[in-house]
Image 1 (cartoon, rainbow, N blue to C red):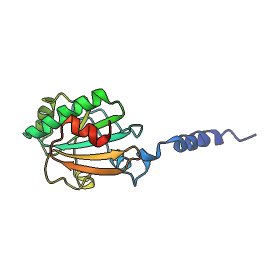
Image 2: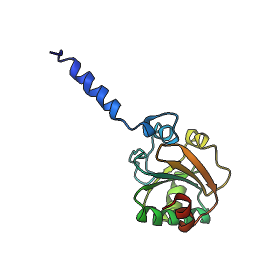
Image 3: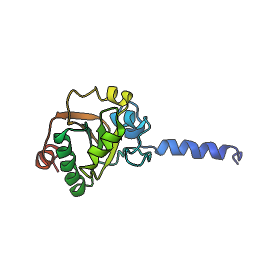
Image 4: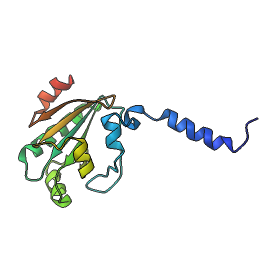
Length: 160
């Protein structure tokens, strides 16, 4: 018979064993992003990106960027049609309220955050917006795209 003090340790160990490696592995991009305190820009709710999706698209935007709005609207269509794709809108700029107001014009159906300096550095400080990172189901960066792509080009790219 095992001592009763061992049961909490066994439960804790089993929880870590069941954790998804692509979201907890610090070498994966999703794992590194999830180590940060991700909070929805609109309501402040914390969240984590899921590794159960085939694709994760992280789109960096700025306020006053019309192409960024167009890109976000395109991603709304992709998310509605393809549940195996998740999108994260990542606002680049110091003014949270400007980013909120600007991104709200696209009525995003996905989570939106304000990038902090650490996340910006992790993503390589994209030189222009919109800038989208494509992450596979293993949490690894596959490619990055500078500029606007419509939903049909994304469908071809991701083989949706």
